[in-house]
Amino acid sequence: MASMPNVVDRTENVEIQKFEKVCCILNRFGRRPSGLIPILQAIQHEYQYLPEEVLTYVATSLDVPPARVFGVATFYAHFALEPKGKHVIRVCDGTACHVKQSLPILEALHKTLGTSEKNKTTPDMMFTVETVACLGACGLAPVVVIDEQVHGQVTPQGAVGLINDIRAMEALQKTAVATPAEQPATEESHV
Image (cartoon, rainbow, N blue to C red; front, side, top):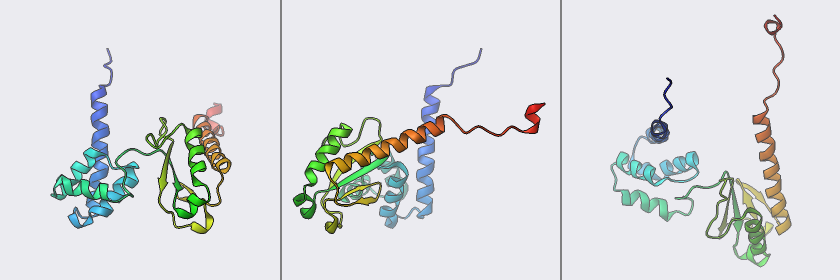
């Protein structure tokens, strides 16, 4: 009788893989405490956020107090301690964007995605909506940045259109993965 794979073993394998990636990042930066910020940037690039257990592991690996690592991670607005969606949407609410009606854009995004100021990420982890103080593109106000791509003079309807475009692209990608292209027949397959 074949035994069922142990769920605990799979969970342990995922954890081992997580820390292997972190070890590679630590090694890349020489495991020096002076490299803490670039280490955290690389970890966030890998995971889309900074998991608490990884921050503790980094502190131990660098031989620095966990409070120092958590202090850096919470001081800089760039770092996130909660998981983010695949597509990160940043709505500027700086003075120029606010005056040019950025709040209706934010409201339209929240309504379309079912997010809020408290729950910034969709349950399917596809989208995260954030507000930022300034994106430095005041001449294009109001501005929305999606996955590091700047969109200027956005309207609420335009923002919803951008979301619909992303959803359509994701659906196409999912379909392409689900139905791989047919392989050409080889001579051996006709035997």
